[in-house]
Length: 466
Image (cartoon, rainbow, N blue to C red):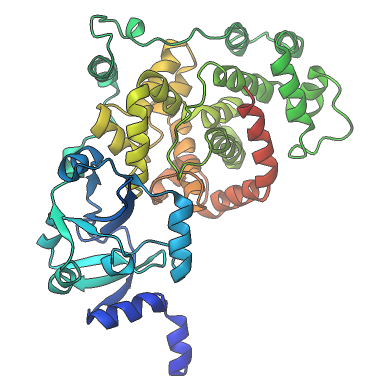
């Protein structure tokens, strides 16, 4: 192989970055990003702004950027720059990721002083997946015009409750009491003003657990709610299901296209979705709420079918777990309205972190804890509460493990395709083995779902119309 051919086969930092580092006299080594590299050495760069102007902030990936501390330090109320503005800047230089190079922008720079405790630092090259290793003295040289400060929170000090469900009630009560004016109320159910379940939802829940329920029963319930009936019919008529002939009625939709299980769980998802409204504020990088839910449910539907028949959990219920997996997000917005905006701003400036760390740091609980609590409060199936509670634990092997395991796998598969938010996370072999699904089959399922992305997005729009 010639030297030229060898050179093109090796990924390199974008030319604008190489030229800039050469001009500054900074030595560097290119290496592929890898989860095993120490996060304390990885430099997270974010561009923030306010009415004063833009500010580049650098901090290590083993920390959470705390905007409250930043406000105390700078006297400014900073938030992530709008994505379209950041994209214009990156596109101008042919970059996909913001590198931690103060000289790249004309903005002032503030860095977390603990960065300089590391012998070598790893900065984004500007291309996803490729890092540049720079020694401390060269990195210090790049920061000659920057200011230092302490504004990060070590992740080792933040302990999201992933595996202590018995503490959920106390932790949610403590968080609600701390962040709401209703501190006198002691009972959690009285403190959180949860809207009552719609009558339609109550009827559907009763049908779900009735072994003698028939298609006539579910048709009767759906038809008493005109909006729900219209959605079920249009759902069945969607090109996604490619139904033969015209769908003329709810019964037609159930018998010919969707089936009893899917309709009952779909109708329940729609009914619950109307109970809590979508928050007006969202992180800039978030996939729209119902779009994420529909994609996850569709992937779980495919994964459930890919499992050996004898091991499959109830398909309709796994679909519903996908549909409602992020329901705790709606509940956080409902229970903590003034603080929800702060959560959104922190999610924007900490793209390297799972939301659990941010919610634990700011509130003391996570959306998974409060979502699972609500499912139990509403007397939903225990499988559903378990799916919501343990969806981020790829090692969960307790009761009803298939449900949270399927959600975990679906969310991580979608994240690897750029859908969802937060960092990409590995899919352990043990998770696939517990579900008896091969890695190739799992990839095949998510690819098939994304082939129908346009059609799924149309379905998601129906959920937004309430």
